[in-house]
Image (cartoon, rainbow, N blue to C red; front, side, top):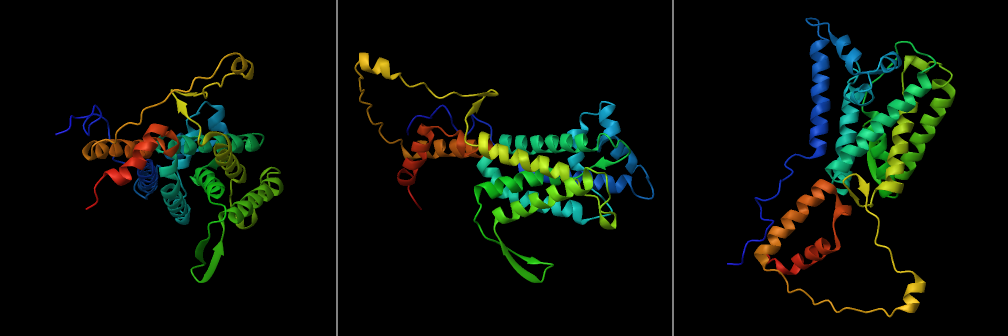
Length: 300
């Protein structure tokens, strides 16, 4: 029997619940709490809004946490608000979650929520009043823009009003949404005008979340991070030094393939790492092990 490797199945933690599952569960639980407190027996829904919803007076009073907690609240009177956000989070998160890993997935959503809240507060600060920002649409925008950056030409088929078949591409949808929110921000939200039919849309918050998704794609995804600091790549020798000193090429012996039982353990560890930190966290050695495992592990 081959000796046990130091990273056996019982020497490292397993991620049993994905970030997406925790997030959706938290939103559903918060909405259920709103329904209970807002029932005719309780009449205490305003306590939730005062403590968790984002507002200019609350932010001025020091309720900084509402920049994050407002995303967990939704409008009980408009059931499509929470249902739409949860469905979009689920479908987009199912695609992007394994690519980002749990920590980056949570980090992206939190950054988008806070950034959208700050942009909304900056636009509405001069109005003051009792307006509140609630809903998870802002982090959904971040995921939507990120999805459009990764898969701009993927075809998406759906039924408009459950009747008309429509085929769109993520890039087209992202451009249309950004244009719609930019239009609403300039013509309605910034001047303080009301939308037709009394509709309330936080265009500024949506644009803030979309910006975070785009910036993540451009400057964060694929970069290696450790202990909160960026790992700088190894510096190459300068040309002047190369001219003075000969370059010694060392012969690296090729390692013998690992036994099948050890490769199984190593592959399990690497897959857990992908689930936790994303594909970008893999080292060259771990990628080599995955390639070897295709032929080394016997098929049943």
